[in-house]
Image 1 (cartoon, rainbow, N blue to C red):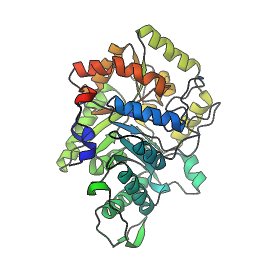
Image 2: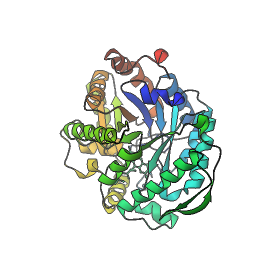
Image 3: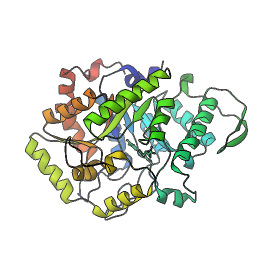
Length: 378
Ligand SMILES: Cc1cc2nc3c(=O)[nH]c(=O)nc-3n(C[C@H](O)[C@H](O)[C@H](O)COP(=O)(O)O)c2cc1C
């Protein structure tokens, strides 16, 4: 039983995380003057606000290189384990994830860094494990990008080494293909001898199978409601067949305004200020990877806003744009197809989260999907 993360494992039916606040511009590729300034002061305020509102977690993006264009989105960003340590030190209940690239962090170093952060947060650290996809990052590190599925094979070794260290099953030799290790040890174990929750966001067959075998949460891409309904059911079924429970989450970009018209006008403003240079660079990087995220590769979705809006506002993820009732309906629809949680982003997180919380959260509570903050067993 993971006592310090109970809100994520057995709390609200519809769970919410704040996604991407450690990066300049967050998940929005826009030249708007109010685009997210990812200063530490903003991150601290956002973490404390999210906690006060009963949001379950914060999930950072691991990115080592900006996307260029006019504004270089994500070019400035806080390294996620160090960021999580800071967030955990200034909060009491919320879970902070770190997002860690398998091939860029040696597992022995990562195991100790994460155990350290887990102690600082008294059990509130989570891990978003990513295997990497962009050529420019691998090149910057001077590492040859492994073939797609080999990245997940490396991820299997990486994760099994870390789990073994955390289990206290030391010393051990690990004759791996990627990690031929001798006499491995590492202490302390995670806080309370409970491992951090682990999620991964691979949407290819190999990425999804990795989640089914190992992850507590699969942070999956959105395609269409019908396609996701079937896919989520299968993901949960396959995990259960292995004796595991898995949650499935998806990222959601949000524009919530008092009227539908105001929200749509603002979405148009975001698109009018799209940073096409950065978006083009991102699309080029994606296209060069062997497997492309379905949301970006597939036909324009039949559900919800246009693909252009989704790309500019949330990198191709699902977007909920509208008045509070419309936004609440959208989140309920996602929950109804099987998503347990959503990692939400706003253009300006700090300016927009309070209105979302005041108007949308009560509707989710009325529909029985969340309980008011004071009554949460976090
Ligand atoms: C919600 C979400 C969050 C992600 N976060 C990161 C990240 O922070 N850093 C990163 O390099 N890749 C990130 N990715 C990319 C995934 O790790 C993965 O490479 C991508 O979804 C393609 O899937 P595949 O690796 O199975 O082909 C994210 C993807 C999703 C859907």
